[in-house]
Image (tube, rainbow, N blue to C red; front, side, top):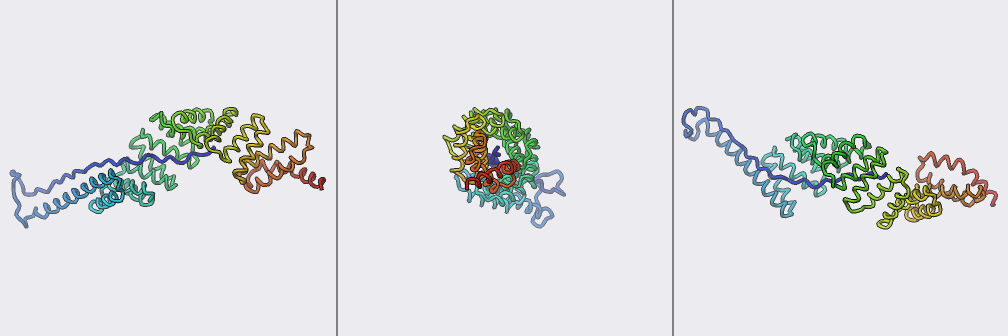
Length: 362
C-alpha cells in the first residue's frame, strides 16, 4: 500500500520562561554586619561590577525573549527572529532562545538553520523536551531519519506519553521500513488521543505494513469517521480491503475515491477489485482508463494483459487478437519496470504463440 507521508506535527508552542539568575556575590571579610560598604578599589568592588554586568546581560536577554514572543503574537516572525538572535548574542547558553529561533527557521522552511538551533538547544539542555522534539521534527523533515528517531527517543524519555512524539516516531520508523518498531508508538498515540484521525491513519498504515490488514481496515475506517475523506485515506483503505479479500467493499471504496479524485492508480486498483469479483469486462475498462490517464502506469498494463489473456484462453485459444494485445502490454510493462519475474514468466509462456499467430496472419 502507499506509505503515509511523514506527519508534520503542530508548530511548537514557545513557552516564554524568564530565567531569574540568582547571583551570590562573594562576601569575604564580611562578618556580622550585612550593611558593610566597600570603597572603590577594595577587593570586592570588581566582583560586584562583574556580577552586576552579568545580571544586566541576563536581564537584556530576558527582555529580548519577551519582545520576541510579542512579535510572534503580532505575526512578525523576522522581528521575532532578530530578538532571539539578540538573546543568543547576549547569552550564548540561553536554551529557550535557540528553540525560538529554530522554530521560526522551521516555519520559514530554512531547515538547516532550524536544525543547528534545535541541535544546540538539545546540547545545552539534554532534558529539555521542546529542544529534543523540535530537533527530531526538523531532522525528520530533512529526511535524516535515523537521527530523527534518536532525537524522538530522547524526547520520549522525558515525556513518554507525548502524543506528537509517539505519532512522529512511528511515522519515521515506517519511513525506514521498520513497521515492527513503529507499532508500539503508533498504538500509544491512539491510546493518548483516540479521536485523532491522523493517529488512526498512522496505526492503520503500520498494521498494513505488517500485513495485518483486518486490523488496518478497522483503523482506516475509524479514521474516516474522524477526519475529512482524503484520496490517500480511501486508497489505503481500499488496498487493505483488497488484501483482506473484501473485494466488494474495496470496489465500493474505490468508486467513492474516483468520484472525489480520479487517478490512474485508483482506476488500476478498481480494475484489480473488479477482476477478482469476476467482472472481467468492467475490469478491462478500468485498466484502460488508468492507461488513458497515465500510459506509463505499468500495473495497469499488467491488468490489461491478464484480461486479454483470459479472453484468449476462454476462446479455446482462438482469439489470437487478444493474445497479441496481451503480449504487447506485457512487453511494454517490462520496458517500464524490468524487475517483474511473474510478467517475465507470462511473456515466456505466451510470447512465442503470439509471434506464430502474427506470422500466420501475414
